[in-house]
Amino acid sequence: MVFVLKQGAPEDKIAAFVKKIEAAGCSTFLSTGTEHTVVCLIGHTAKIDVDFFVQTNDIVEYGRRITEPYKAVNRMVHPDDTHVRAGDVIVGEGYFQVIAGPCAVESEEQIIGVAQSIKESGVSMLRGGAFKPRTSPYAFQGLQEEGLGFLLAAGRAAGLPVVTEVMNQTQLPLFEDVDVIQIGARNMQNFDLLREVGRCRKPVVLKRGFSSTIEEFLMSAEYIVSEGNPNVILCERGIRTFETMTRNTLDLSAVPLLKQKSHLPVIVDPSHAAGLRSLVPALSKAAVAVGADGLMIETHNDPQSALSDGAQALDLDQLRSLCADLLRRAVFEGKKCNFRS
Image (cartoon, rainbow, N blue to C red; front, side):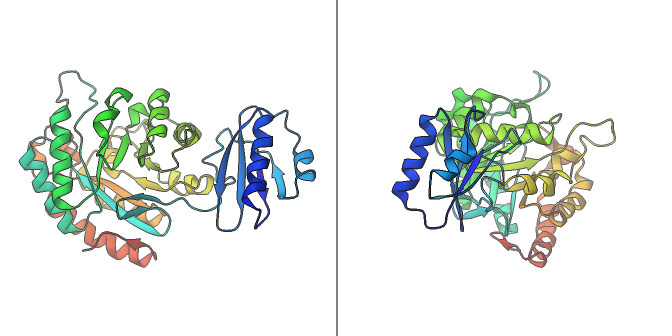
């Protein structure tokens, strides 16, 4: 349920109205847009009489029940697009960003070299895995805390905000200096982790689970935003289908649909979707065409010897060429870019 307030409603009356709603047993989420302020009710709203609150509060324009289970991330609650900032980088409608780096941090020398190269290619943010969730317990699990230190040092040296994945809530104290926390596909419905990340207020890249519906994806984002953290970037990274020639199937229809249903920015990870580096450039361009706000691309200095996911990683020259092409396309779409060619 939402109550849209009249333009120019005084803050003291808004506070009094919110207090009255909360006294009725609902928690609230306040969304301030360019034209209206919206009070979203979260909880058991069946007992709330919409007409009564509209008629007895002169600051209320109208009230409406929201049928979707996601409230705080719903575009009805927040009609304006959310822009998420990481340092000087802005992700959201009207902007286009590229996040790149290796699947795993393998050494200090490797990640520093990759960071410097992708910065020269115009990439906006550095990604890399220090803690690696792997299907096999015998596969490379990342350099853990040491790798996180290498990644942060590389980001500082290159002047790039750092994006990296957290595996569980006990690791969060280690992420104090991380600019953007990534929630991987396997953890999309780890609700305890989502709540903790929601309380830490850092920007979050939330990846869609490979067997999750769009509604389930938005409900996971709801866990984060409802805890007070609106800085969520949705990442479409492909879903599991009956197709076996690619690692996953990239659901490009999810991008405009998510932007229609929610105010949160949406980026695309073509690397995990395809699992094949030869498909990454074409899928990246397709993501721009359907309105994605950015891309997350796996890039390695020597993909043939990568300790994880080398088959889907671009080399540094391939990334440089792709960034030049993406810049032209993004500018053509009328988007601002932090990255340059």
